[in-house]
Image 1 (spheres, rainbow, N blue to C red):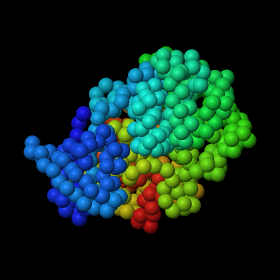
Image 2: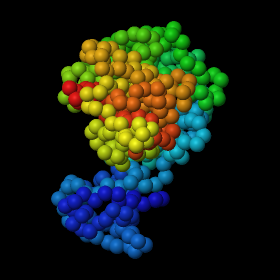
Image 3: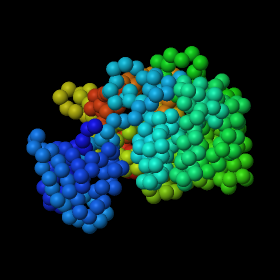
Length: 469
């Protein structure tokens, strides 16, 4: 078990006044060794706090008196101090199995940890869940949690997870709901495996066995060119439409029986089928925003000025294990090392010995994934501006059906930018960055054109487009 390491001490805080320093290893809080940031939060809420630390191989103790609930003023480097509970399923649709070799080690971590579900919105299958875990979730009210369902038929779920515990592990879902824990479910729909009649059966099973679920997201499987599972393939147009029809039919039934629509289809299905997105009211508060449910509608609301603050968390892919704040996905992200509108440029954006920086009034190119371009295109067209254009970045690095903006990598962006004018402004959404790096390990500084990194929401884009006007 590792120990939490202090990364930041807030000036003037109880921790600062007591003499704690960045780099200190926290050994115990009130005599207890915290396993994770959840226990840490509970312990540091106490008014009287004994902190045992290790500094330069010397153990020291501090007595800190503060108001109960007052922040200690300490940030630590990770959310889990003990070992992450890894996944022992072998799902043939798992995207982590489809990653190429040579990426950052943290990207290959396949977790099935309910704590990361609570903190970051990760999905857990519950196949490694225990009675002790249930007791802790109930006692500490670790809610909401996200659970991967995929199928309610035990045999099909066993087969999809490639785990003999797959079918029976949903008993924990029933137990969580029995104790009032809010749970969001997910079904990764694989053509020919759990779509069609199986999807109908799964939603019937949800209504019959788990009607207290807050929501169920139906999302398409993601395929990269590195996929080795022959049974996994992209949806056809007919299949995408069939999934939407099924979801819409069940929404009506769920609303009649349990009072809300319950099941939602990912935005990708509407893009694949070329169908309009549902009205904003349909999404019931956008509770599954981070799972790709209603993102297009929220972006439209933000971009058009219908809302004053971003809707939903803005967490990137693999954020929970690489560059996310210890406080969890609900906390502000800092993917590029600072906040707001950031200007970054590479050495290639030069002519002779003079580096070219675009004017604020220069023409603008908005970098986005193929799916993002489909969403942004109509919104930008309504502006009637001939100085703003969408630059769709095909994902050659991952290939397959990878088209979401969060999986754009520096290699693909660089290839596209190399064909673009030097003196234009280029806006890059921060969702594809973690600690300033793309998934392929490159940085914005290596791009051949200067780019401005902006938050991934419609408000930030609208403000960036207003610069220089």
